[in-house]
Amino acid sequence: MRPRRARLRRACDERDRAGGRAFRVDRPARRICRGRGARGAGARRLLMAFDFLGFPAGSSVIVTGTASGIGAATAQMLCEAGLTVIGVDIDADRLHGLDLGPAFHPHVFHTGEPETVATHMARIAVEHGPILHLVNNAGPPSSLPLTIEEGLAQTAGSVQRVTAAWAAALPEPAAHASLVNVASVAGAIAGGPPPSLVAGRGGAAENGWYPAGKAAIAGMTRWHAVSAAGRYRANAVAPGITRTPRLGDITAGAYGRDVLARTPLGRLGEAEDMARAILFLLSPAASFVNGQTLVVDGGGGLAF
Figure 1 (spheres, rainbow, N blue to C red):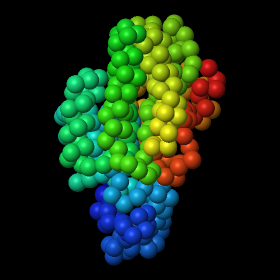
Figure 2: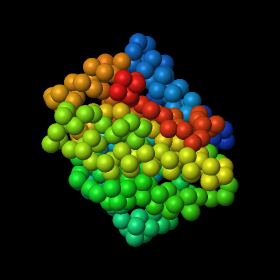
Figure 3: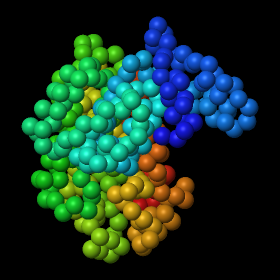
Figure 4: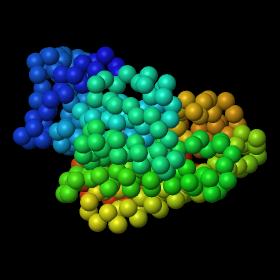
């Protein structure tokens, strides 16, 4: 966490519990916010942005696939916004290596294993109490050579298992409860680029399970939005190609350069771009948004 944000996070950790939304900013934070120049202005914008999201005081969230990339960026922003974050991943070293402060609680388990999910989700509910928010981000890389059946089990199947366990533990009523699933633009197009551009590379163009699984996640999100009957909202984000440690330098190849040239905004997505979209959909600021899949790809999908 950046030093300035870390200081703000500590200074603003207590909120006005009576109002449930406004920050109760102490003197160190006020000095930062009242400062002149870029430092003070940046601090004020940060506080205003988090207050706009409207998360009630004491909110908690589970984020799966937290060890790196989109999951790590999302966990960091949620911690900075004042939430308690339960981070889930199978990569113990990276997960425990995240320096997100005392509001972050790592849990190592595989969301693709039914018995493991049931055991650990029950443990999380006991340790952390009611958790009103869930971000399903975990999933295998698109380059993994899986069958359609295996891929669906580890994408949509994983999402459903975690969501069912989370929803079963929700209190009644569960005001502001919300779910955000991470799908992909690959679930809404033919699956990827022409095979000639990615021959031998794997990925969505060569592994049919990936677009099938991501399309299933988007469909499942719509189903949850209706079947939850107001107990919680359900939305999804569909990232375009995003710079993450898993992806590597995609622009070094012909496919990456082609994607970059086709994207109207002239760049690839960053993990923080996706995290900001996730935070909005998860928050009370999106309280009347339900069953939607928000494409976050800089307009790149329009040109394919």
